[in-house]
Length: 188
Image (cartoon, rainbow, N blue to C red):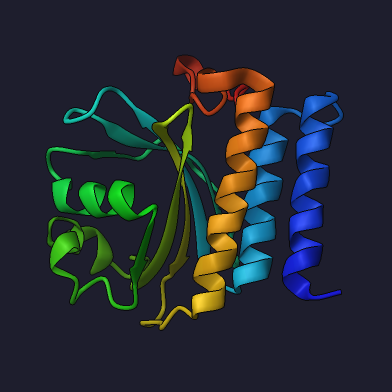
């Protein structure tokens, strides 16, 4: 069985485990991030949730995991007004493929973040929707070097995003990836 088929089967099991209460939302997010790290062999995976209305949305990081450091703190935010060109392309196409973040004009507003020693040098993002509304983003990041993402990787991350969308909608609808104030990470 091809690797991507096994990974998608594992993702489906994660969704079933979340739905039947075998795992909670935080374990689901961390297992999803670990699965994406393994599948895409990237440096870091971040999972994001759109919050707010079009034009004033923010992307809030609800989970992050590094190949080297394991789980990382979540809670970072990106505002649509500041990163408008990135948001537009991501929402319009459903994916954002960037082999070199420092050379990408749509990511110019993020340059200070990407130039840091732990900054992202290449990224592959797939957005997903619930009931026609942009809801979240799965982000594979390469921190040590630029990277040309293969067409199969883009296709597979889109598949992951589609399955996650269905799982989240089925479990808790729009509140599933909300990072609650006070550190309650009970939501996916």
